[in-house]
Length: 286
Image 1: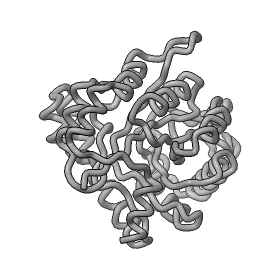
Image 2: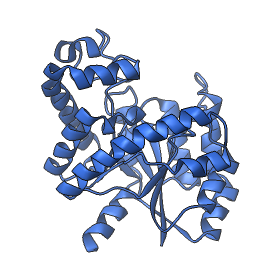
Image 3: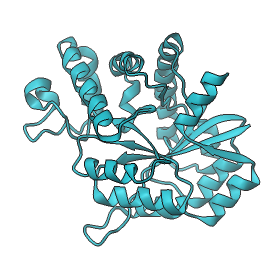
Image 4: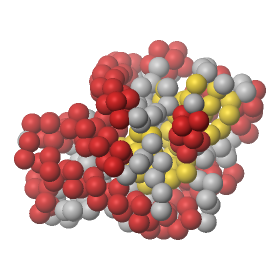
């Protein structure tokens, strides 16, 4: 059976992102979103989710290019005085790996994000990460433990079939191949930790290598090539609501998610749209 989770990251980042996600949920194929709990529009996002109980809202953990709940006093040079994490992923990743003194504070930060999510949303079925930082070795160790403690059944494993993506879109091929090596290695380690603790994920993910460069043709091509099992396809949509217009690529993702052609491809290929809650229930039943 071909099962597909269509997820939107960055819920709560802005009112434009919230609007794009809810339009894709109302008029399109979106069934799942991941919430950035410290961002300005997080509470508004949670209110929207409460009005749509069929939208499965997970946690989009943030340790780079976003806001911290604990702030600079607890996380030192990783967080600016403004409360924002540093925006250099390589520097952040190296610091988290080599500075062992930060691990207790990172654990407290991630625990605070889990608890804020539960306060805002009331449940938590899946965890993923901004820039996929959640599979960083230090952060994966922390998050697997927290997932077990808080009974969160699913964590994203960013393993994309890179050759499928390259057959569909050959742009940025060197970058995609490097990403594939890095994230497959990190995902393999994280999967081992998850399996030992009874956690689950989809078999494959799409959205990693083509992030910010999605097209309707690419998404239809991915759907045409979905294999049996569970696949996640994730997006970063946003809609123009009359204030500062979001990036054109984010607005295009709303159009893709609401495209009749994309919906037709799902039906033509016998793909079942599910959520992480459905995935967890299916694994428990098995």
